[in-house]
Length: 197
Image 1 (cartoon, one colour):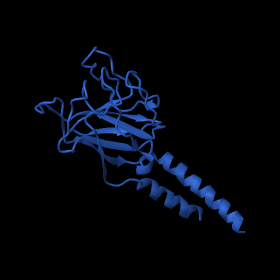
Image 2 (cartoon, rainbow, N blue to C red):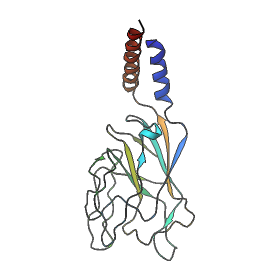
Image 3 (tube, rainbow, N blue to C red):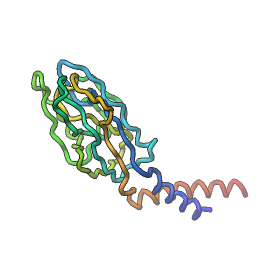
């Protein structure tokens, strides 16, 4: 029974998430600090519901684009993203709006706000563009926040509603994490076996 559940555990952990997920990003939403505007962040991606675990490597790219002015002539197709241990978001006048932010990937220095030149940068987020970036999900990460890259969000538009992140798993957690899961299932099997005797 232990061996069977251990095998099931390893198989399950390796197949928690298959294929790719599209994370739609609203062009006027951000988790970063802003000035003279108060946008809400995009709803964070719930990693657990998608079977995405710490230790997995995600391949992330942007898809589509959004316009960054009311004339709809300047387009942008880049974003920033950050892992978090919670969905808590502070008001937009805070530089560190995500108290649960967890560092991962190559750090990106975000632009200052268009008005008042306020610093928006946080050390935990990373750049995402149309070229793929591989990022290891850090320990404690339960959610992923992301936003289009900009310094003023209120005039942004996405007429064809196609801007977002494409996310796929390219590697599963280290074997130690998988064996830990198998061990838990094995202990459960042993307790059931003793109960059935």
